[in-house]
Length: 361
Ligand SMILES: *Cc1c(COP(=O)(O)O)cnc(C)c1O
Image (tube, rainbow, N blue to C red; front, side):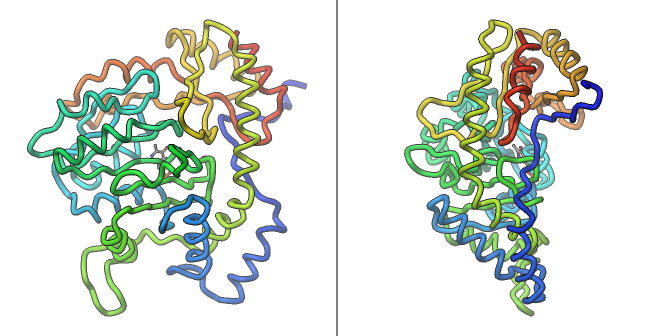
């Protein structure tokens, strides 16, 4: 029986009922427009802005390009960017693709986000911006980061790839910083197949993003260097349908997470708790093991049951082979060796959660 059991991964992409997607396909066929800021993309951008209570949003082809557009629109093409070593590699690769140098500041062991108290010591005359990450949908020390940025005249670009639906002080966390970006990749909490969202608090920067995401020209008026980061009508259609389900998906994840909370009553693993003062989105269920050896043992035991948690994030980005002279970040390096995200998705079976928890005891 166990051999034929369905493989359980750390996440499972939500696919809406096909009949809800079909009317949007009909709209695309009727308009004949598949991309280039079509009516579904515009409708999606408005609906997401409404949902998050933001002035405006822009849908682009993916979250990584969203980070690169954020830097380019802020005129950042060289210099140093202060960032966190505890993130997905895209945070660092966007910085390096823009020919900037990532300067790593260690993380806070509670939130796993960049330790704001350690940022100032890493600022030099070459520093242009701070790029923190709301890791796993937890929230950075946004007040302290804003104060430091103001004092040193730095831009703040939040990688909020995990933070769709997270609220802090009754507002979407995506309204923070000069720019926040989100990822709508199929493996994320909310998705548009591939996709990224850009939220710029400054209208001028938002307009610049809008220009450079479609080659930097308006008709025959070539105004600046651009790239292609446009989202298609199909991506927007998926987003429009999924938006109708997101509240229910978050509620189901919350329930599943509370079952883990209840069952993981052991000193062998320590769930990473979101800050108590935020409305969390239950995007991930990260747990810290006491040692890398015990993490590896658990992963092996779960693999035998066809259950695959993910070591996430591993390695600590300051240890990437193509990064030279990176700062030592002892907390991030330690955490990244001992952390894994457990399977969490809306329709996960209670029996799977029980199985995982049993193995971890
Ligand atoms: C997923 C992710 C990205 C990249 O988003 P894509 O849409 O996959 O390009 C960037 N940063 C973090 C923290 C992520 O998890």
